[in-house]
Length: 202
Length: 249
Image 1 (tube, rainbow over the protein chains, first blue to last red):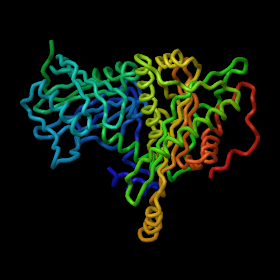
Image 2: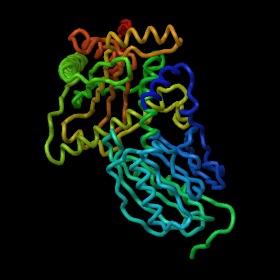
Image 3: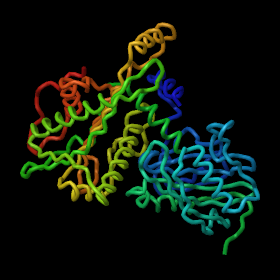
Image 4: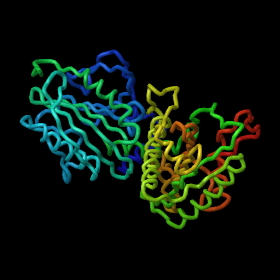
């Protein structure tokens, strides 16, 4: 971490594209997370240019610390949710195509504890949900990041389709922010589309 | 995810330390206190951190310096606000449920301040949807702070100082000479924010990533508060002072 800080400080006068954000215009369908998943946002969002993982992408409204939506675009077997932070000593759990929703939740929780240093993490229920016209799952979680005191809530909605994990998560501080933008997140989830055969729900 | 977010916030603070020209953020230059009634401002215990920094980037906190700086800064904030005709209420330690509400809002405030610093200060990290906007808020629930403290506004102040050791200063010259690179001498960053407790909106915010004034001394603390509060909101009808703004260093 210190190395990164010193590097960035020394590169102070150079704009850092890794930190840059691009506008996602409402009303237009866009492909997300370098994948086949497409989203039609009803309002404008800001897309972070650097990716949290190989098949992931993050959007925000008021800034990453305040509301963050992450798209996981087809995590394949043996892949991790995020980039490894310490592969040798704390390897992140890997996705397997045969996972049940509860296994996905467990993988998610373990990934957060390892990558986010989040010792305070709890899952508050898993239920069936529709995701991009597929049978999927939804769960709520709460956590506090290492070095921070603010309590955050999260909601994840996803499905395993074609042996890959497709999921969209939303996180925000428990006070004010989570409730304020939950509907904006759910609108993104409702607009998600995946190509190919689907398991029709209902 | 979380960790990368922390990296970015910290890195941005360091990055900004060398960009004083881009430092100042005014939430809303048109904001004025009402002219006809007294203004009660609740001041939260200033977030003060003072330490030293050696050749590496590891900081060593100094409890004595921190305690002295906190007392000196609080006295200067009090004097500054009274000078502006505002009533200042230093929030006493709370108990039970109120203590939790205060702690939760202080944590939320730090998070909002991190978002502002990250997205309004870092070159190239601005949010396109907020290009010409400054609409950050703690949400309407912040009225609870007004009920607890008995005020109309809340003032948050945070200062972070790490004084470079002699070894670090030598290293800084070497670094520049050998690699042409930049190594900050230390950290001297501070910010202050005013929250309207009727709405929870941040109506004024100022960051000084290259803060002057040695906060360990009375003179330094005076200078720091003067610089940080140079453009503190005035009352309706009150003209901005024509005097030159306080010198930066």
